Length: 230
Image 1: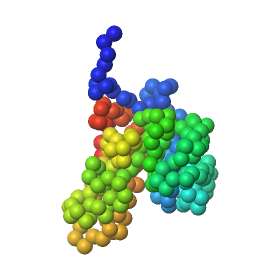
Image 2 (image 1 turned 60 degrees about the vertical axis):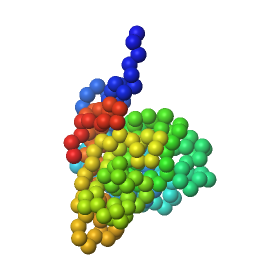
Image 3 (image 1 turned 30 degrees about the vertical axis):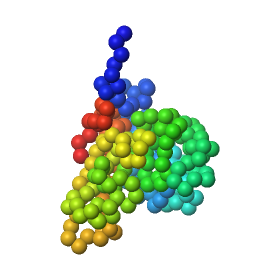
Image 4 (image 1 turned 120 degrees about the vertical axis):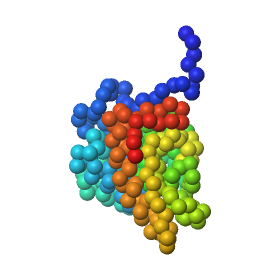
């Protein structure tokens, strides 16, 4: 049998028993990880409640005991849990990674959605959920990866920035791009005013992208993700 070059492989994200559009909101399960206020989580929850996102919020996890995302999830009756991140400042230690993985597996999560989760995921976590972890970043990647991307963009002097939803790989903000939303930089913008407008775009873009993935519309070949139109 002739080997297929990796560059020609086609990845269609769906759970193993998924053969078409989601017929029930409970059939596609989301695990949301966050460290902060939970505004993008609320956008996902509202989209599900309104019937725009065919998915179920199966579990919400945070590395911050008093994070807003845990409070919002608890108020909505969604399973929510703090898991200590361990000894490192910017990533999960081995024991914490195992705890996060076990909790997500027990919740039968189809897609891991990062919503302001301030820990870099690598190694075993990404191998366990390969092609099933997404993130939203406040710039038009590949420009301005890393922290405070809106301030990077403003300081650089760009006229347009925005937000990007991408798959998570072993790099930092380097995975295949699924969808983007442009946000103009206007005269007199500060880092705070620009960031606020980017956050509005994030709350529109993220549920739309997750919905496209849930319906089996997103396909990835190499670095090219298709099936979602911003």
